[in-house]
Length: 147
Image (cartoon, rainbow, N blue to C red; front, side, top):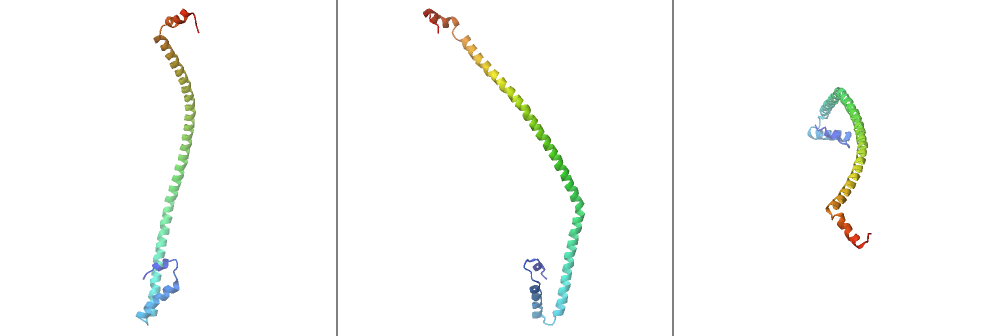
């Protein structure tokens, strides 16, 4: 017997019963009562199987409930720990940014000093490597013109 029709959304009990009895009336016209008793017995066995499956599923759900609750509690604790760790990391990042800002300001000041020293060093080298001061002043002194 095919019980899959019971699961259809458009299942109609009357059509199913009439279909089940049409087959019997064609094959064995006088056996409708016997067929009805057999059909009722098969339906009762099917109902019992469904009830057993539901009861087994319910028992498994009840047995698994404590484990599920422990898992949920463990997840809750892990989430709380993760939240605390995230707050600590956020604080560390903020402190690092503050420390880095001060260090960056110092680096900017050091760079300014470096640039000034480099500029002074360049001019000093020009002065040392260039013509002597006497040569530079000789020409304007000859003509007695200083600018």
